[in-house]
Image 1 (spheres, rainbow, N blue to C red):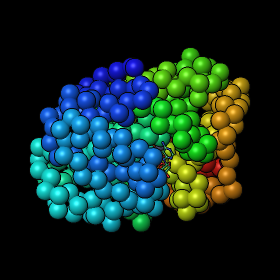
Image 2: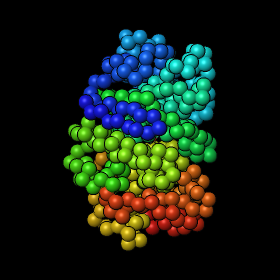
Image 3: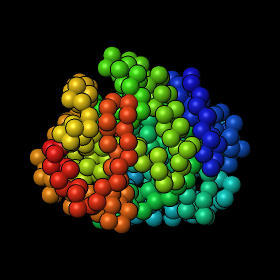
Length: 349
Ligand SMILES: NC(=O)c1ccc[n+]([C@@H]2O[C@H](COP(=O)([O-])OP(=O)(O)OC[C@H]3O[C@@H](n4cnc5c(N)ncnc54)[C@H](O)[C@@H]3O)[C@@H](O)[C@H]2O)c1
Ligand SMILES: [Zn+2]
């Protein structure tokens, strides 16, 4: 078991270990005294893991209610959020009660947002069950839902009170979903950790505790310096400006991690073509992405992608901030005029 302490606006621990679901009650009790706990999860995860978490929480004195919604990004919207809030109100959750997000990034983001706004904010606990949510979305306090106009356009910063990452749950994850998480894992190496990147080329799946803990530490270090994303935290958006555009162009048929893999490949290719980064580093990135079953290109045009990317909320007025790799382990932020984005993407396709 590895414990990582995060000192954001709220201090909390991320516990990474095997078979933790049956201890989730004990672990929660150490940070929140027994209260009403509203577990939010999706139908797939509910079938696999809800009973174990529910029993463990009940054993420790929590009064458990559960809200289950259909799995998939299509559920991460205002309508599901409304249903969760109405359910919490009907279940008479008070300010001293809590939400528990059991599932992947979709569950974590929407449940976290519900916790952020229900009664102006109550505590919540993250129990990530995908690699992506373990290494990325469950830590750092970004919560939210998608709007018709784009991904994650409504949300709040709201830190969890505890993150319980039981990586045995990843055993049931389909290959594609595991690959989604690998894209985010690889991202941390490219941003600022070349040694970690090299380790990943040996194996991700057989070193899960090390890999997850290392990603969480990396994210923690960045979030502690810039919780509200006014500067350094934007590095974590590496591959995401183009990635989000790919997700939307594909009408969400290309999943988040796969789109981020394409986004990282595009941005690094552009960086090489502009003489900022060595070809050998690009080759290493492409090889690692492919070895984890991830795509490195797409059929959308630079015009299609840049049009969507400029509507992205990461834009500041007439500029957009991009995270650009100068080498593996050295990614830097650069502001470019929105009008140059299309040309930039063209160099990377
Ligand atoms: N808040 C943040 O900082 C942040 C960071 C990165 C990504 N995100 C968000 O995370 C979301 C993507 O997360 P995701 O990839 O975890 O998606 P997800 O939550 O949709 O999970 C992917 C699929 O795997 C299933 N699943 C989950 N756990 C499983 C398990 N253990 N076994 C079998 N099936 C399981 C789910 O039911 C779902 O169908 C996106 O909405 C993205 O915007 C947020
Ligand atoms: Zn991401």
